[in-house]
Image (cartoon, rainbow, N blue to C red; front, side, top):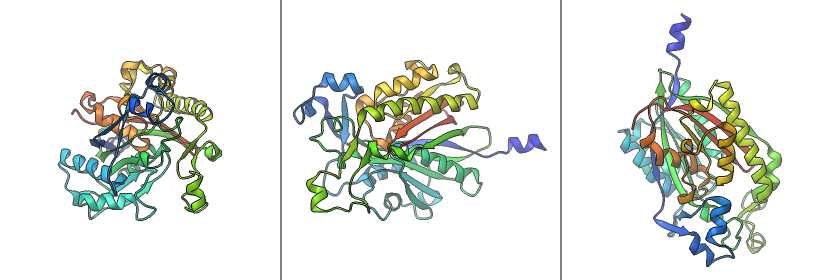
Amino acid sequence: MGRTFALMKITAAITGVGGYVPDYVLTNQELEKLVDTTDEWITTRTGIKERRILKGKDQGSSVMGIKAVQQLLEKTNTRPEDVDLLICATVTPDMLFPATANIISNGCGITKAFSYDMNAACSSFLYALATGAQFIQSGLHKKVVVVGADKMSAIVDYTDRANCILFGDGAAAVLLEPNYEGYGVLDQVLCTDGSGEAYLHQKAGGSRRPPSTETIANREHFIYQEGATVFKFAVKSMADVAAQVMARQHLSHDDIAWLVPHQANKRIIDATANRMGVGPDKVMLNIQRYGNTTSATIPLCLWDYEKQLHKGDNLILAAFGGGFTWGAMHVKWAYNS
């Protein structure tokens, strides 16, 4: 009986990936004209060469999320009305309410699902993926869409040379479905340390400091970051949880097909890979083209590398974000592209 139960255990498998990035490319050379910086300085310290920016009036994160989800539904031959749940991971919602997830659902013709937003800063997609997996594992939901979408250019101060070089806009989405063969989301470690608020946040715009002439004049609606502190904490945290998940799943570096890290800074990515014993040939990297798209970085990596993934590949997803939030996840890939 125990063996039968084990064979019938439901896991949540990723069965498709869709993505979208805006057409406008903001290069390091263009940033040299805006702030006191150089292409060499940016590339050496971050690994970023360019990032995508969403232009146009009334263009929010949902615009990119809709395009990513539409592509996902088309690729997986999924009817919009068959989706049970849509979770949007974002720190740049179109508005405080309704949820950006609701706007994306409406734009994609998803009419029979409930939907909501998840905000855990740069760990948002990882948190949302873990949450979506639980709905599949409950046995009550068959098709869950998790989309990461952020228009970071909306909250970046382009006179702040420390931060404006880092961020870009983009969206990507995955479909979760039940699996009975042991593929999909197998384990995760998710963490929070609220004392990190002081080092990475947006000062105004919420209920604590609503928008006012004062907050606008003081430029408090942009990202604030103490880079050195965040960097040190991110390096240790991402590496620790990635190693913890590997130990829990009895995985060695030889067992890992890909590390899928949050794309914040190449030095953080390298440190995490070194701690895991994973060589650069096993690390998904697209920060050079997109910069830090916050909630979209991990799914954009899966979108970019989908054709290189094979059924049974062991993936370690790892992220770190403001708050502080961080985590790692073991995913066994469920299909050949």
